[in-house]
Amino acid sequence: MGNESAVIIPIPEVEPIVASLRLQYDRTASLGVPAHVTLLYPFCPPQAIAGEVGVLRSICMPIEAFSFSFTEVRRFPTTVYLHPDKSEAFAQITKTLMKMWPDCQPYNGAFSEIVPHLTVAHGVNGETLATVERYLRRHLPIKCFAKEVWLMTSDHEGMWCKSAFFPLASHKTP
Image (cartoon, rainbow, N blue to C red; front, top):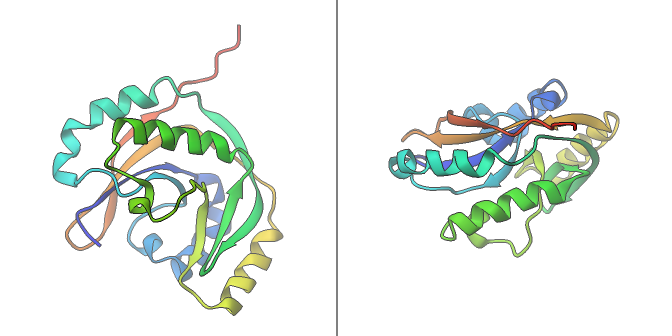
C-alpha cells in the first residue's frame, strides 16, 4: 500500500468510541486514516490528483450536509463495522463519483453492492470480532453529521494524509 488515494467522509463524532479499537484492529488507523465512511477507494493515482481536485469540489458543492446515526453493528467475514441509518445517502454520493470516474470502482469492483460502513476491526479472529461487536453495541446509537468530503493520499511508505477537503452545502431553510 502506497501512492494511493481515496475519497472519504470523516466521522469525528465516533473517534472517542472507536479510536483505540481502530488502532489495535484496523491497520489504516495507524497509517493516518481517521474514522470515516469510504466513498471511493481506490481513487486516482496521487500524481493525477491535481487535475481532479476542481472536479471533485464541483461535485461536492451541491451535496447537502446531513445528519445520520450509526444504529447497527454489522460484520463482513473478517470485519466489524458500524452501519449508518442513512446508508443510501452515502451510496448516492459514491454513485455520483463513479459516474464521473468510471475507472474508479469501489474496492476495484470486488463487491457487487455498495455497503457504506465505518470499519472498526478488520482482519482479526472471530473472538476479537465478537468482543468489538459487543463493545460497540453498548454505544449505539451514535449521532453524527456528514459535513465534508476529504481527498486522502498515501505516500510511498503507505502513510495517509488529507490532501484536500470539500465542505458539503449547508441546509437552507426558506
